[in-house]
Image (cartoon, rainbow, N blue to C red; front, side, top):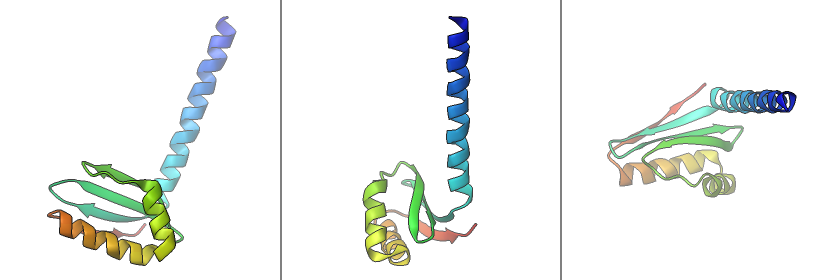
Length: 99
């Protein structure tokens, strides 16, 4: 019984480490579009013309829907549209943060 528990514990730890490595790789190897305001902040991560992820605080962001929109209009046009929306609906601004 102890061997099974030990094996499961090691397995879970390995999975957590792999997941953390993937998240770190995406975060540090993507360009970032950072939008900050009093109402909330959002960082859009993108690479090779596609949205790869986001971080958001106090702002809802439907990643899948936004990925589809960016794919449809292109990443540069999407970021222009997002900036217009963000600046019209919050007190903040957006800027590029290249890796």
